[in-house]
Length: 222
Ligand code: PRP
Image (tube, rainbow, N blue to C red; front, side, top):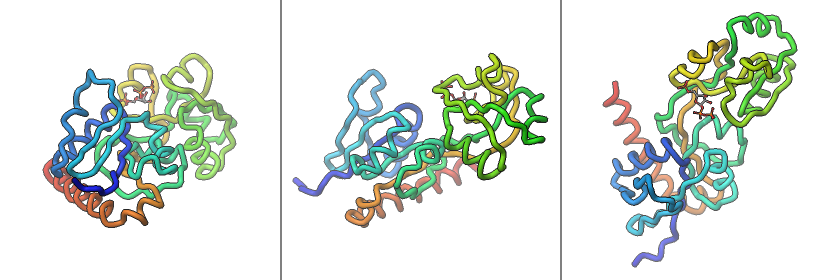
């Protein structure tokens, strides 16, 4: 049996992991046991390709990769931007597409236009700060929340929110609208900086296979 070192891949639990596993299956790396939704197991091995996959919470994926506990990670661009970890971002996987937006009641549009000192609630305080302070040069008060951020303007905690919009139904159902678009988002593959030097060939060949498959999938969807 090969003694080659395992390459470890950290996946974001949930839908992103499912889409990533489908992609690995398409390039000939099926991980059937990982698809069992009832299982509580967190780590899985592909002996044939000397790969090890584990499931983590999104914000932890760049942490595992920066510290080298995983050579490779798959996470949303939102998480990568927010966490600001020292990792290489190597591939746009083309799924998990959504947008980071400033949203709120339509009336908050005026506050944004006049650069008023407003309160911004977000799960993404770094992204919100970068956007308002660096891009817009507007001083704001940023309040960190951990979820259901849409509540912010409804209950009077904040004037607006900075959050992900995918279908737009959460905003609609809560009487909020998109006021500004911060950036488009999708799932990204990241690589540990030392692993990239030490395992260049294996990682490059994996990236190439995945990139080709992503392009094929995109062409099929058109
Ligand atoms: C995300 C995001 C929005 C919603 C957007 O929340 O924070 O609330 O999805 O999706 P939509 O545009 O398709 O409605 P998530 O489901 O992750 O839950 P959370 O609010 O508890 O973080």
